[in-house]
Image 1 (tube, rainbow, N blue to C red):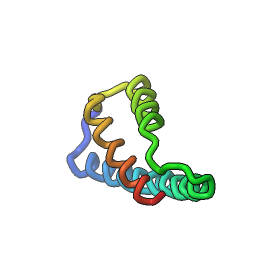
Image 2: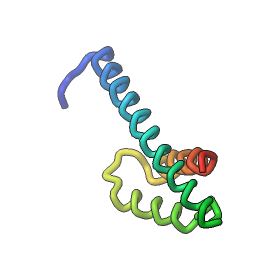
Image 3: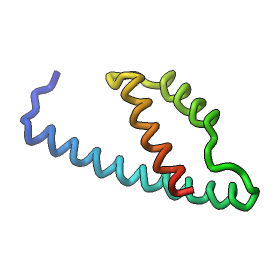
Length: 86
C-alpha cells in the first residue's frame, strides 16, 4: 500500500465527494425526465420492482469494500430523493 498523508487522503475524498454530487445531480435530472413521462402516461411514481432490480444488479457488481447492506441503504436514500423529484 502506498503511504499518503492524512491531508492527501482527505483531498482525494473531497474530490470524490464533488464527483458524487455531480453524478447525483445528473441522475436526479434523468429522474425528473422520467417523472414527466410517468405523469404523461398516468403511471405511478413508485416502482418497487425496478428499485429491487437496481439493488440486485448493484450488489452483483459491487467489488467492495462497501457492504451490500450499506450500499442498499445509500441507494434507498437515492430512490427516496428520486421519487420526491418525480
